[in-house]
Length: 329
Image (cartoon, rainbow, N blue to C red; front, side):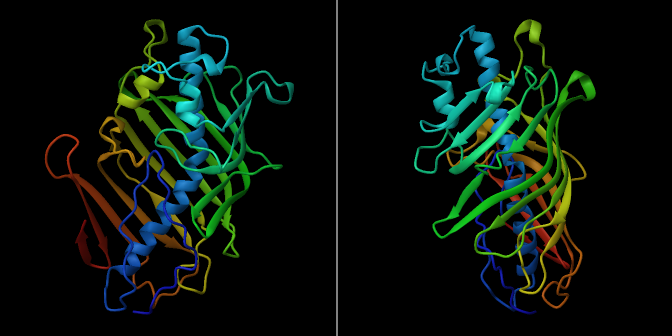
């Protein structure tokens, strides 16, 4: 098998719903290396694509608790430990401008690489604009825009930055699910980001569905407050695809289709301090689309399955299957 050239560093940054396979050695005799690179590239692209939603969910927790606590200012919202919830979620240096540009219910959130980050969050720079329509997420659709004057950017490694260059459309909307539950559907069109070390801009389009496993009941204050969000279990599914900003084989911009067939289950209450949300179970599929080097990738398809190995919140085994080969991590 041809030695793969992962031309972008693109280290996976911790996000609410992502996990990556341990980085493989460049062993030309290892038949599963190409599958690991394919899966990791899908996870990396999804990580950046889902990040505006991660910001929005934090804002929703803050706005929910502001309403529940009956305070006037975001800085006055407190956690159960009586510290600033805004600083806890977003860090000391992050600025949140309410009613941005005079539009009621619009928020501009500006990040600073030099400051600390929110709890279990990632370092980022630039700004994002979120239009809430003065509704909480369970009440109506939110629209998210990249700030063209100060686009979102991420310090992927000490030597690489990833920048969000364009977003054609980005929404989060509530949708009725089974058993009285509410799904939050993240709709993405033309999500474009690029590493400053590379020449290609991604364009990912698709949908994520995130369903807290409790019935939202505003009358009894059972809503997505920060406390409820952190202890809830989530069912997550997605289907998203398009050109990524990676060039895995050294020849072609890598196009990937990344999806689930059944829900993956996540439990934030079991999570570690590194920001990765604990995945209790699930299965993900990644498939090359478009042009690719078939010598470097003898199969276009990889599957990773997560199964609990023992007790609640204990070890979860990940099994990767690629081109007839299996490996457990």
